Image (cartoon, rainbow, N blue to C red; front, side):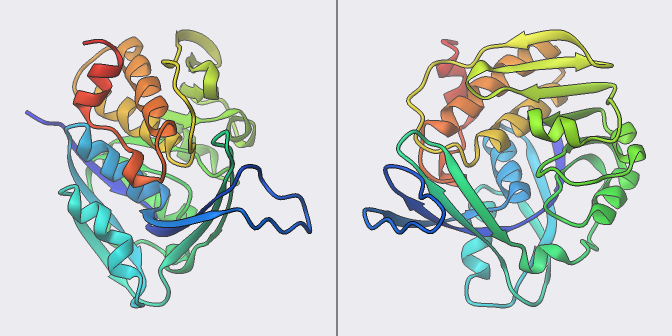
Length: 271
C-alpha cells in the first residue's frame, strides 16, 4: 500500500529569472530569461511526495487573486488532495538562478503569513515558510511528525523534540535551539549525513549531475527521505534515495517541474 502523508505548508508562485551570473548589489543585468512555476516549500514537498508514490493531503493558505489557481496547479496536477483557506494575496517568490544553478531568493509570503487552520493528522511533514504556531499545531495533530527546519528561523525546542527527524542544511542546523535526536544534514554536492544525537551514523553521496537550478533540490531530498522511511526502508537507503532525488531536481529548471518520480530515482541509482 502507498504510504499516507499529510503536508502542512506554504504555497507560492515562483517568478524565475535565469542569467549567467548573479547580480552584484546595485548592478543591472540585461541578459536574463524569465519563467513562472508553482512553488513554495510546502507545496513542492507535497508534489514531490506524490510523484514518489505517496498518497498526499495538503493544507495551506492561498490568496483570492489572479495567480492563486496557477500557484496550486502543480498540487492538483500531481493528484494531491488540497485544503486551502483563501484570502488576501498569494505568496510570491522571486528567484534568480545563475549558470551554475546557484540561486538568490526573496519571498513575499502573502497568505502564507496567516495561520494555517486546516490541520491534518497521521504522518505529517511541515516546514518553516508558515507561522511557527501552525507548525506546532501540525506537530501536535500528528501521529508521526517530520520537520524540514527551513528557512532558518527561531523555533521552540519542543518542536525539535516532536520530530522523528529534522532535515536541515548547515546554516539551518546552527539555528536550531538544541540538537535533535535524528538530523538529516544536507551538504549540497557533498551529499548528506544522518546524525543521531549529533553523531554521524550514516552518509550518502549524490550522483553526479550538471546543476541547472537548485531551487527545489532540498524539497526533493526531504520528500524522498520521508516517503522512503514511510515505506519501511532503512535510513541508509532513505538517505541514498533522497540524495538522488535532490540531484535530479538540481539538474532541471524550475521548482515543481524539476521534481522526480520514483522510477526516475530508481533509474538514477541504476535499479
